[in-house]
Every structure is written in C-alpha cells, then in structure tokens.
Image (cartoon, rainbow, N blue to C red; front, top):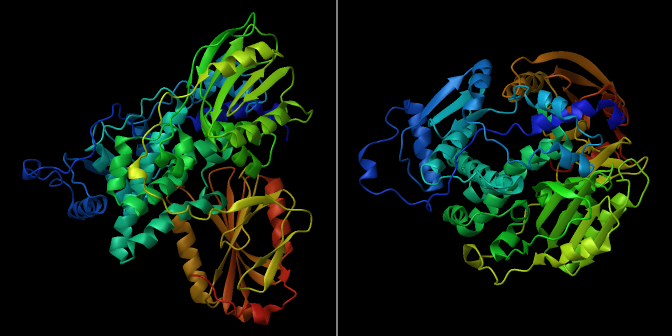
Length: 597
C-alpha cells in the first residue's frame, strides 16, 4: 500500500509515538549518596504492605541505595490506569514530533495539514504497552492488576522511586535526542535493578542475570511487542519507544558489569549527551569532546522557521527510507552531534540546512555517500528537487532545495571543534564487548533456514528479513515489524501435559498487555504432520497464533509464534508454515542435537 493513500494514519502514528511514558522530573540533583543515620530514623517503607515492603528492601540491596521518602503502590484496573496516565506523562521536546521536519526529511511522505495534525495529536494516549509507572511528584506507583504479582514489574517501578530519592532526573532537555538518552539511562537503571532482585530470589548468578537482561529484549520485535499503538506507529516512533528499554538496558548492564552498581551513580553524575553514547557505550567512556555550531548564512530568500537535532536515532530513520536496515544503522553510526534548520521562503519543496559532525572521516564519508543516494535517485524513497551535499574532514552538510555551494561551505566552516579534549568517564574503564544482537538480512528467493534440534527447515517467505547471529532458530520479521515469526524447540514430549501447560502460559504472558484475549484453538495440518494452533485476536489489528508440532517422534516440540497485522502478513506466515520439511540430513541424526533450555 502506498503511503500517499494513508498519510493521515501517519499523523496519528506520530501522535501515538510521541505520547511519552510517565516519568517527569526536572532538574539534575547531586550524585546519589548513601543516607545517613538521621535519615534512617523514620522508616519510609512502614506504610507499605508486608509483601511490598519486602520487595522494596530487596530493591535497596540490589541498587545499593536506601529509600528516603515514603511512596505508595496502587494496584489499578486497566480503565483506572488510563485515568491516571496524565499524572506523570513526560512532555516531549519541541523537536520530538515536529511534523514539518518529518516531512522535510522524508519520514512523512505528504506535507502535514496543521489543523488535522492537531486533531490527531489531541487523541487520548494508548497505554496497553504500560504495565505500571511511577509518578515522582506524588510518589505513587500504579500497577496493572493483571501483573500486580509480577516481581519484575513491581521491582522495576520501585527502582524508579528509589532513584528519584537520590537524583532529580533532568528530563527537561532542549532536544529529544538528549531527553531520549536520559530516559535510556533511567529505564536501563530500573531494568538492571529489577533483574538483580529477581536473580537474588531465584539464586541466579548476578553476572548471568546482567547478560540476560542486556540481551533478552533483542527478540521483542518478533513476539513480545504485541502493542497495537506501537504496531500502528511510524517505525521511527516504534524505535523511539523501545530504545530506553533495549539500548538503555544494554548500556546500563555493560556499565554495571565493568564498574558495579556504583558505575550507574557515576553515569548520573555525568550523563550521556545523546543517543550516540547510548548506542555506543565505549564512546561514552572515552568522553569525546563535541564540536559546536556557530550560525552561518542561509540561502538567499530563506529564513529559518524551526531548529532541531536529528541525533543518531533519527539519522537512522532518514537513511532507512532508502537503504536496508543494516546499512542505515552503519551509516548513522559515528554521528557525534548535529543541527538542522527548517527553511521557509525557499520554494515549493521542503528545505533544510543540516550540519553534522562525525567521530572520524571514515564515518563522515560513509554517511555522505548514503545521503547522496537518498537524493540522487527516482524511487519512492528518494527526495526530489535540488540539493547540495558537501564534506570537509569529519563534517558533512546537507542542504535540501538549493544547489548552493557557498552556503554549504559556510555551514561547514561554522562547525567549530572543541577547544579541549573531554576527560574519560568511569575512570576510562574498559567495557566488556556488547552482547550479540541478531542481525536482520534480506534473503533471496528460496532461502532456507534450518531449525536446530529438529531436523526441520523452512523456506523464508519473500518479504521477511531473517535474523542471524542468535539462538532463536529461524526468527524473521517484515521490514515494518508488523509481521513476524520465531521458533522455539522444547525437549519435552508432545502430550496432554504439554498442551495443558501451553494453554495456561500463553494467555498469562499476554494478559499484561491485553484486557480481553479473544482466542480459539484449531488443528494445524502441516507437511510435518498435525499439531495444534492457538489463535489470539489481540488489540486490533494484531493477531498472534502459537502453532505447536511434534517432532523427533513426539519427543520434542517445535513451536512457531506467528504475529501479523494484515491479510498480506498472514499469507506470508502461512507460506512459511506450509514450507516446513525435513532436512536432507534426516530427522534421526538432527534430533540427537542438544536443545537449549
């Protein structure tokens, strides 16, 4: 479907993506300190229930800090969660959802109509992706009733309350890229703390818990993200909502593994300056000095109507319109800081002057080449009209709607290097390598994927990207993330006991996001034999089917999770299911392979 036919939905998607999560606090406080004896005289946890008081003590031990002020934990229904949402909603920065900027950079294909945009942006927020939240101003934690006994959820929100006892989190930043970086530290801090609480209860080694916490979210695209609001949002805003929980958790985990929990205290004393330091924690540790941007002349007849920053996340989105995801991620990597100005009075085409500073000439050259390809083509993802792209060393300037070398030269000269080198953070500690994250690759027609431990393979449907470099055994998704399939192999018998467990666990795991689960069960006939399909009609238009098949003579179970939002997507997933077949090796030898638990 062409974007032109559904562009009002894109405006709705933008408003959904900019409905930020609750977590406001305004000014940076001191480095977290351990409370003194006088603070411990009154127990701030005295009013909590015994169960919540116990969890709070475990959160204190995991984080290495003590609660200073009382807080409340309120278990609410879905309807009441909606009612309380605005109590702590974080207001986005001016450049977070500027529709003119989204249009100028090609992320929105049609020019926004202001009155229609304001109509969509006034819609109530969608909160099915929220399990709970903490409101700093009132010291209240709200938890969905359906997940009120989930230790991880409760500990996560308590970790936010604990942090706000020690740091005035500075969300009030000038640019969304800066605000997003701070949100990432906050969510990473809370996620790591909760993971350590759960690990202590289960007797799990803390280092194992840290590794798991920093990598477990990497598969969220494939099954866990069953949130209708995110499914309908622009890809940029889906990633914007996920970055704090995914990249932020990896950032926090790598800091803690190298420096202990006190490393997070040091991070709060010297916060990341943008998403580039969240995506690349080694860059954060180096403490790279950032260039600054002086004003430079604009093209004749043009005037600046708005100024903002793209940051690495939005630069990825800019490149992703024209290039494969892996290429776009690589092309945006190395961006240190940037500044764009939207220009008016320049003609019919949208105009901007975008100054970018990169970590080195190699990164700048890579971006320059990819940016040129966004303009110098005639495909739907290309930007029409005149343009000027110019590089000098590690700086690149992009001017849209003007062929004006003098303006580009002046803008390059206005990128001023820092006068002094910044000091390393965290004492210059060396971080462990990042966890392996699945890479998504485009497969050619007829590409097969072998599912380890089953002796089975399937053909990757055209339109799905295959994940490599992980143990997910044939996980794949569409470029928009709306349709996905992943597989899981269980080393158990396919029997009544297994089916009973499946019927109980799947609805339980989905209940946190969906108030009413509409499901039905049906036999599933495949080339491997007959299994069972459990189809869940989730918040429209989302549909999730869990298909389980006996393999290895019934001694193992192959489960496929099929997530779709359209008939076209469901058709692709059906193609994958119908392509299941034994490998050339045969079932018996392959089924002797170990199964990861």
